[in-house]
Length: 233
Image (cartoon, rainbow, N blue to C red):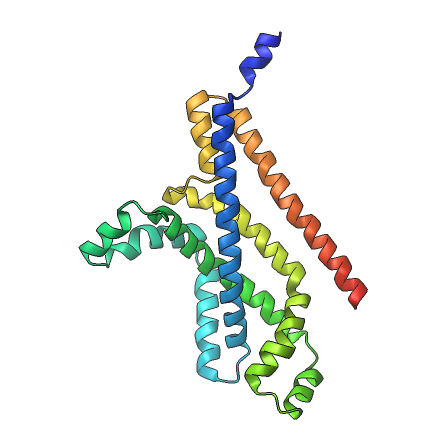
């Protein structure tokens, strides 16, 4: 009986593969969250601008990246974009670097995709800031940039925090699509373990538990942020 149970367990070597994949998922998600938040702030500012050309440009960006499948975008950055580069540039990209081309293309694709959604959430937060505060800051001599950076954005980010955390959860889940361009994250690692051991339930079961634990931690953070915001309000 004990021997039978042991046969069902994954060897430490394979657990290490899954752990490495989870760590890749985590730090790549953190990089995408940081990049998408910075770019999302710029998108939200552009969407809220009083310059029609800037509003149209950022609206086109949001429309493009929200209305095309993420997997297609990842394929574009991995297969399509390098094809228009000079041969020397392609050889450099495909050579071994600290940041592999698989990782780089995944980060670019995921960040640009997520920023469109993050930007819209931040824009909603901006619209939730009372107009009177903007007018008061302008009356005190603040420039438009100062009003946005010092008055509007801090409040807008607090208002948008709950939906932003939802977007960050989506980023963690969307990293699983990066396996299509060769990034060895958690989903890729679970497939490797399954192919090596033929223990499908164990490999994908552990991966599922790691995803649940990660998303659950973000959900707890979202609930805490919502309670804190309710107390401040």
